[in-house]
Length: 164
Image (cartoon, rainbow, N blue to C red; front, top):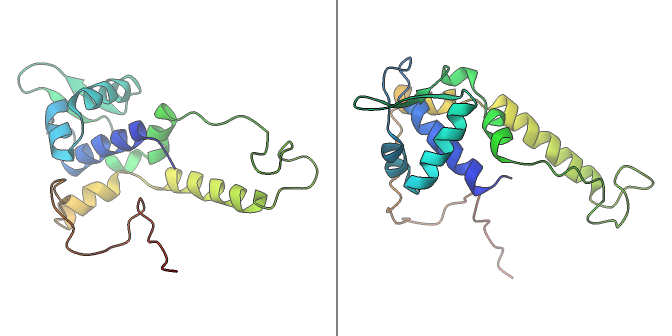
């Protein structure tokens, strides 16, 4: 759905959403990276990009750090996605060998168009408020990255394989 840089940017933004209190609480790039199990240099670079896009505000020095520039409910995933992803503007169908949208559609056309529409809707409709609410209203905390799984559970990354 999106690349590692976008995923890490969402991770950084979600951590800032979890501590949102109107922008008073600020976290350093190192704190965010360590709390999310992300590489420090990458998080620092991502926060610079997010700051340039006015999604986070940063202040240097002691007591400084980063906070969301707006309330979590006012920032959607699409704003972050657009900073780090490039849309494939090619009109060639990778499966049908022709130009997409011209002539008969390939066998996957309608499913792919529907999937793209659903992803765009998800990115626009999903705000960082869900992370604030999960943390502050429901007391949910992320599982530490060094925690071993206790049993099988479906993950959006690891599709359960069917036994033959």
